Length: 227
Image (cartoon, rainbow, N blue to C red; front, side):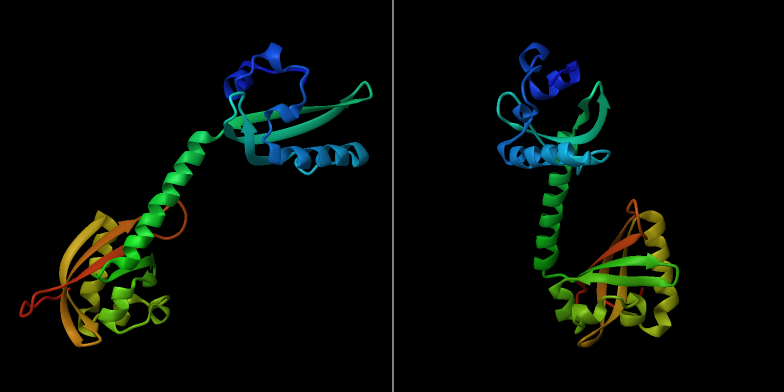
């Protein structure tokens, strides 16, 4: 290494005087060092490198021994018959922590989704209806439909009596507009027509169509309802 700026000092813990002149492997975890040496040999032989001109994610090694997740953009040039490399490195610890927290939250949600004794359905809203993307085991037990049968089906055509289709579409519209709707509804089950309390929540992801999550609770006997 021939130069080292204050940002690198803050990221890796080495002051410039302590790091300049040392090999780049100093800030690499052991597992990255052999691949790095092979890559440098390839650059010397061919002038081409796997990561040159690319932005990649990997781990750096702090002076105190802990690893730092980084995003690396590597460039190379020749001058005075020597080859030089420049690295722009960004600490992505915060982003990686957020991604890990999101994965853990999704894992908890999936566990809850699968284990709830109440039917839960995940759907996407398209112009021509609301289509099932997933359902939990309680849905299968209540409605007598395997998840493989339900996925891809328009949920209102599948579960709502034909006479209530207009009300069901209005329900979907209100969910998408307000974000959450509760209603007493009638739905077709394995045991015939039954009354339920439905709680529906909508979500608009950064990409793709809006999503609707429905939690379906059985009503007390004798309590009539309609969507």
